[in-house]
Amino acid sequence: MMTYARNRNAITTGSRVMVSGTGQTGVITAIHSEGLSAEQVRRAKTVEVEGCEGKFEPVELIRLGLH
Image 1 (tube, rainbow, N blue to C red):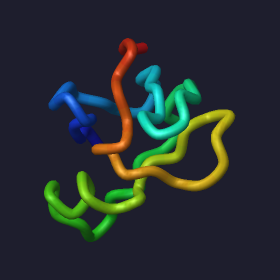
Image 2: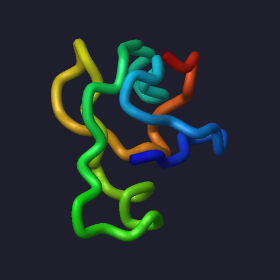
Image 3: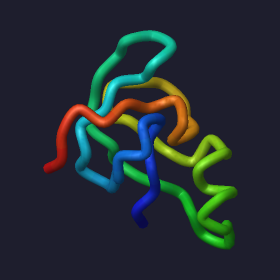
Image 4: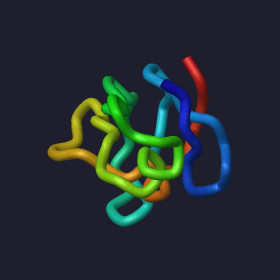
């Protein structure tokens, strides 16, 4: 599943991102989008980031690079 980060950059599994609130960085390991519309995915805690505890909203993330 592809969705968009805070600055409207596309993010997918494998994208390197930074969590805007904490400055932690990591790679997206999963985006849980089953049964959700694109808007719901962007506004819900659906993204898991390697090395960061919990799930994040895509709008909380800043893309640093793709695969």
